[in-house]
Length: 427
Image 1 (tube, one colour):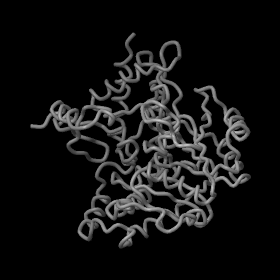
Image 2: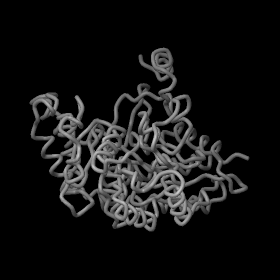
Image 3: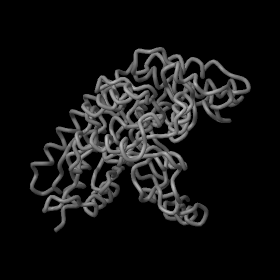
Image 4: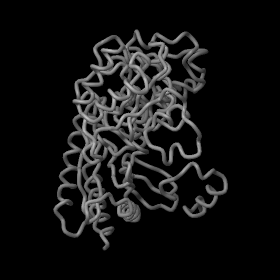
């Protein structure tokens, strides 16, 4: 019989330690917001495969779409023999694009691949090398996207010098003591000291930082970046890999600001658990690359395209934009009730749009408490709740339950979260 311990021993022997696992728990099956491990223990999923499962595990409509496509064909390589699901999905993404200009899309496989291609497209369109990103941002683990990511450990340790012409600005957050004015002043300094704006191809930003701590980008900042890009011919890229597809109560997180980007990177919840990503952009920019300059053998897999078309149907038919807001209200109320308890760990800064919710854990002196955060996550796991931490201090807990979760399972999960915060409150 399979066991978690036995599989963990095999994993250690077979797989390099550079690929980390949050927990030594091995999944056997899953349904919507619930997972069962190989030993039969049930867990409520508040991680969603890191924001991949907005439509839950094994949604029946996704499974049907995939089975139907499996019965037709699994692969041709779109660059060799194209297929209709790819075209239809791009048409639908173009219609959803968070800008008024005509759009085009390209499909890929991973979030990092989407970001890499967005940078390639921006450089092709502008003829410039420079890219500006933000501290605390996460854009991937490939050589280029690792350089864009605004955090050294663990993403850059031992991997050498980053590619040139990549720069970082401080991301505004009250908890970090950085204001929007500070960020914009740093941008002015960057343009004076390190790179002329006429050498910058793109500015890339997450509308809500994911790994950085679920920190929303201030609307004031996004508006200022849009103005800067317009003034200097710079392309504004919204990295919607984690914020996209209803998580924030909008199809894309940047829609909360009213600011229109030029390019949008998407992945994660686009295909309901199947590997698929893409770049949606203004058509004149998307057409800058020469034929053959973009693509990939598995990019835009027909299986994943079929799943994504089903996901878009589910979001519309099941009202997941509204559901995200409803879930967010329920989660915030539950967390607010925890704040006033005397027997739970101190939590603060409950934040995030829609159902992209996070909070911080502090010690009695009001400082970030990463050790206590680890205790909470361990206590929750023991009680059958999967949670993830994030943030530059490791003291942020994020809630990423499927938007299709039932009220009963959500309530059970929030009870387990409360219990974990109480259990971890040791002096």
